[in-house]
Picture (cartoon, rainbow, N blue to C red):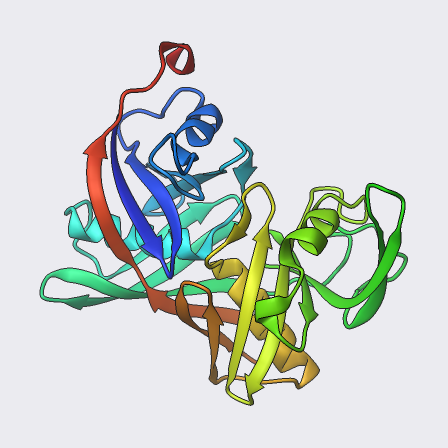
Length: 290
């Protein structure tokens, strides 16, 4: 299988050109190639496919073989992939995802894409659409109780928002010491979120700058998450904790800096770098190809 390893702020995926033919068992292939010490090493697999609704279609699979609805960093890398490889000559493309059709504007330098800006659509806070098992129509800055596997309960104050996939955003004093794995794993698998959830831990550093760490459903802690950054940007602006409407907020993940703009109508714009790491060929086990 020919592949290209790419990342957006350290949120890395294996990209495969599926314009002519889709991979068999893409979820299982994602699980195989994503292993950090035994495969290529990635947060998952992204297939670039044809679309009858947009310029291209994205199918993205997490490291645990599950299929995801949307990936902000992945969509920017797809834009770089298709432009750099000559699959398109346009510097603005549309991309079909399970989270809707996204429009991506590219910054081209010396014939290569260095930066991409994605219209991520509107932030969704209706709990039935996230989805979230919650008695109110929204869960914005509310105390939510979760139960650990040993039966111990804990309560955190957070905001549930969907950017085509579900997120739960909570604020901490120090993101570097936040219990990302211990708490993120419990929240991800809680019955409160029937389709699981991504969890963002946010520290407000300045009015125009926040830091966050993310626990992604199906992949664990990752170095960045585009939709997660969008959820963070929306929550910060909506709650008045950082940023202003219609202005870019600096949102720093472990892997680098993203910029998020929450517009007046709740449309979210994501801007950030996209990079190619290397290309190669990997032999897949025969049982994955049947």
